Length: 331
Image (cartoon, rainbow, N blue to C red):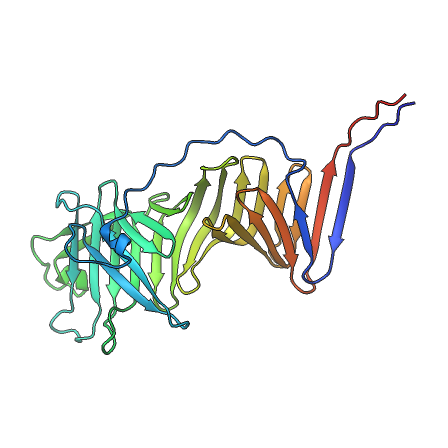
């Protein structure tokens, strides 16, 4: 009688620190048809091309200068793309007479045009209709200083009259800011990847820009498009790392689904690093192929749609690989 070969299942469990388990595309289904790429962002402004705010352009700009522990200076630029008074405003509100001389400056940007307000943080271009920048006073003879950035959907306008009895800086400067956070209105572009959230808050106290979700993202310009979601995004200005945080799910057009609590995402390097802890294991599943890790990292090659894992000392990696052998036709 012909020999019948059933579905073969290989279960691997490794408990060695620094162990590596790889999962490739050998048994994967054919690639999905690529979806159209997202609309390309507008041409970089003169400020972006220079890497700092420059004078002599129609587009207003304000930048924060962060001096990190490694001695590097990193700039965060906030740019209004429009110059028409009918689509938005820019104003710089300096300290009032009864405030200390070293009180911060506050810049207000709003723009309802297609380009919106552009915020450049590391390799991320962030666009929103409204941004408020608080810039601390520079120390000594230093050029530039750090501060805060708040961005969301909303509008800003000049007041016809400064209301009496107001104590907040913007009202005293004759500016009204109306924040209207909504999902999908803060747009982040990193290379081929487009992400959306609803608010951005950068604080120089820790050098982290936090984009509140729900976060949705898509990487379309490749054979197997990638999409997914997370609760938030964290951009660490000092380490130049972009993290997807909270219930992160990555779905490839080829059928791979990957999950973790925290994912470091680098579009330029074509990698996503899924961090695992005993409380929040990471996994990547494609068809019958399953890779799980409880302490360590799964490295995901976004371009090749391949993964491999590295366990921390004492961490566990487990994998399940399913492959249907060809039928035996011998008599």
